[in-house]
Image (cartoon, rainbow over the protein chains, first blue to last red):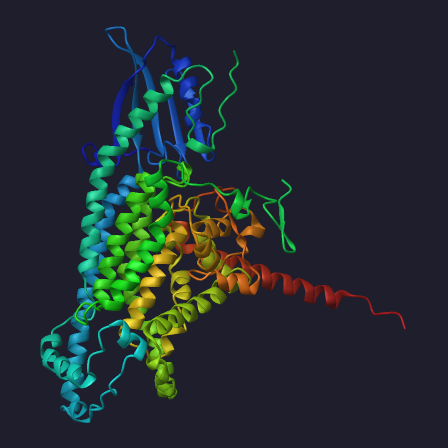
Length: 238
Length: 335
């Protein structure tokens, strides 16, 4: 089932055409494109000048791994040249487009948990009336010494735990406002996925065109496989 | 396919596996390329050890360790581009985006969940339950000895957890999605079901009290060795390195489509654990995955342990019931 969503469907859909380098019939053009569809999980059917295909979870190196559904139509132009028009869609592009929302949601969960945590901590402190503070262990770890071998080799000595504790106490008030979970990585990942989507939206249709051109210009006997390196070249019939 | 006998096992009977160091590929190219891809791994390892050994205390922070780790991964992605081990493993846009999703889960929601139920919480509980102060002698050891012990003890725990996953079905269903990866690159270590990532992260190294610097050194050793297990770069790994450390060659054998080969090379950093316990197979493989290389999508990866666990549990209960029924219907034995 195809839902018509003009403009919006450009998020996951790519359209375009490539020129067929030599005079071929539609059947001959599809024969050259055939290796792209001879991969596991691929269903395709040719009806007159149109080939429709779907790929279920294609292999990583499948040349059409990103665009898992679509159609190819061979049509003669007014100037006599033959072109293959493609109209393909990609679940991967759509999911990548939506991924920033997921990571923004994670960030929001962290912000919410931080807020709860702060409220719970303040309530606990108020209930105990600062008791916990008085009872807080004032023990500091004994000063660790470096092994003589490390001293000889010049490794910096460990910090004095007493001094470290003083510094920590000073920073404690500063850290009081520090959140339990830092949402920064989630924001960074949301941004990263947006960049990856933009790259993919431009790169993948370009690579598709390159793949189709290579397949259409492949000489008889050459194979432009859907899975690249694992393909066994067809023996030359000539 | 006949396979090769390694100990009592036949490796490569189901799918091609190259066995033996003398048979694996070498870096192709000029003297500079040869030199670079022979000495890159040891240079980075010793460089990182020297850095953390001599870094001033203000630098010896976990945040700097994380930043270094991220920078290192970007550099390795570049090396994968320049000198891939197999072109059939080359990173595509879709694979990169998929891998980053798993990496992203690790840095966000899983980290959050882990802070409530992860090993940190368990270690704290155990440390509070016993007088671990008895182990304070550990901090008196030379820094590198502490670091090596932390790294090796942690990897020892991982080795047995990983081996357990390959030998006990309830653990296997959590680990299986990771074995559906069909190619290796540095982010593939993050690909898998979150339950497995949680289990494999449980370590015993943290029970000891140690100097922070020793912990950073141990992290550096782990990073400079175990990151390579999923890398798609052809190295001329030095003989001593591959004898003691895990390599992508070892790990590709572990991820091979050959069943017997997957039951080898369980360690993450120290392959000597596999050598000691008789599970090491030296070699490499290109064809990876399960079910003939079927790629598992994100949705299936997330639910696989639960759906497969349910199926297995149902089958087990049915089998037990049938056995009980069959036993009940048996005729009385003749006297």
